[in-house]
Length: 282
Length: 265
Image (cartoon, rainbow over all chains, first blue to last red; front, side):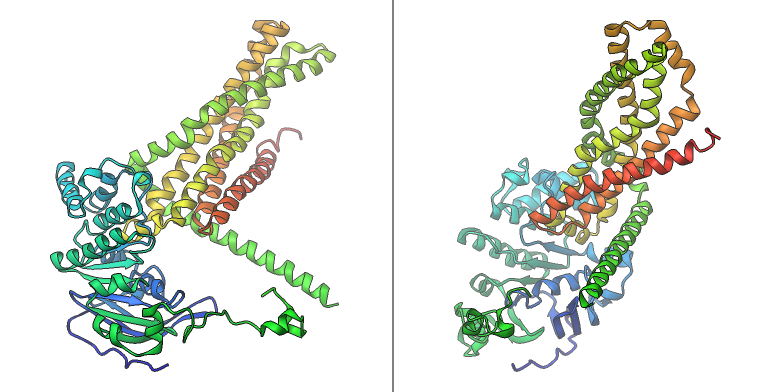
């Protein structure tokens, strides 16, 4: 596969990732990934399952450490930060998890109030106003008294979004924000991602494999493959490119550069029980 | 020959992984101790866990204690009357309870009732990314979630053991005095004379404090490191009960040897 040239240093880059390697046990996930994320943009990170998309978010957030490479966020090398510096940096991050990750023992209101109560000394009356404003922004002020178990998937995602932007972060990380949502909720969450990004002057990294939803909101799309940035495209490029891998992804074709079959010995050999092909155990 | 080598390799692997897990638990315990001040400063965090682990265990502890006391009275009376000393029933029951049965049975019941719930709760929080979300919000989950639950177990255990023993003594009183008809006065006065505060009651409390640390640590550890799947959380819950029970019984032996070593020679 062709490889895009390593990202150059940009003065307006909020995140600069250089030559990052990462492996789970012996299995390499990222192999020399380099990437810049510019201030103010919505960047969609795409790629098949296991291509390292979620790993990338973990590395940027400092939840996992790379085997090699530099991850600079706002001028700080995340893997080298100690716990208090990392926590100081994380107060300026917002992260939306795949299914929202709301605290199930707290109400919607208390979930959104959580970051204020933990990270600020604001009086409860001010927190109340801030929480109501954030909930209003995602259209769920009326649901403040509900518990997370009473919310639909899309509502839970929106509450989590309100919680993630509570402290006015500089960077928003989204881990598969559209998974499991109906088309209406997908549209709502997508528009919110774009609107919050522009209204609050954020920078957003959206990890997803929902191509349609991300093309509507992203300024730039990168495709990960073989542990690197395989393509760096505008949404328009994605629609028109003839690249086989991107096309397979964009058109949802079952077979192509990404094979349908998990590596296996020939079927006939295995069915006939020939030599080493017959064993099912790994 | 090769099968023998394989067996030895397998044995070595399981010993190594058990040691690694023990080391992980040790480091986890240290991490908890580093932030144990948090639930003390933010008392509401501790109160919530004391309610869920401690207060809601009271019913099962008191009822179990009553029945254990009643059975002890019947069995004890049967043996004691052979030697004509049935009026010492009070001492027998009280010593059995405060020294052994109170701390041990309370810890076993607590592991099943509260420890398993703590493991399942933390395991599910882990599986649904709630702990990761908290960590990403720059709130230390060990301080905010783990340490209050651990501390609640340590605080609840001795209190529950006291309730267990008290309920047991009352159960024995009902059966021994009211039902069988042992003399009221000798039941209580023998007990008062035969139970030593330092040797019996304080030692029993120390035991249940140690059990509180063990059960609390096992419960939060198993939950925190549970694989984030339905199967992972369910087997972690089972492991909490099994490991806690074994740990309590083994620690009880060690503590008993240490506490009462000078008494027989």
